[in-house]
Image (cartoon, rainbow, N blue to C red; front, side):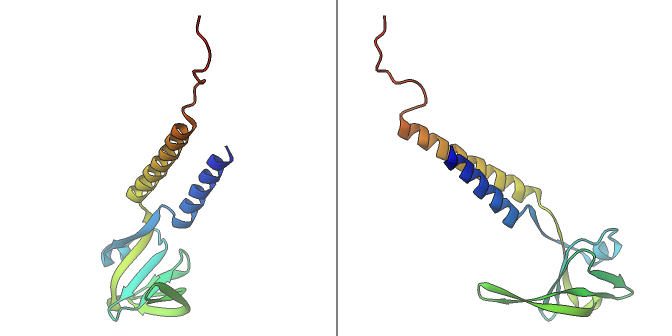
Length: 139
């Protein structure tokens, strides 16, 4: 039973770390007309990437002003540097909001259920089944 509880905790931790959210690309018009500004990732035309948390940026006239992180991707590692300032909307190549991703969530849950079913069935086979053993005499 401890093994099952441990598996459940590991999968819960996986979901907490990976999450069911991902960045979804939006158009400039969708960004400007958005009622709520969620976590934002922008990539500029000169390939700089900036990430802002919800509430840490505002849009005024033709620029984004805020405090966030500048992301520098090196091979397999991301480096984050604090950023405070503005980015001209005309210099931005892509806008992405961090939003709920139903497909990733469904696939993640299906994978976990599949793993649990596999583990339970393999334990069942190795124990010879869950029912009573056939060692008794019948009348």
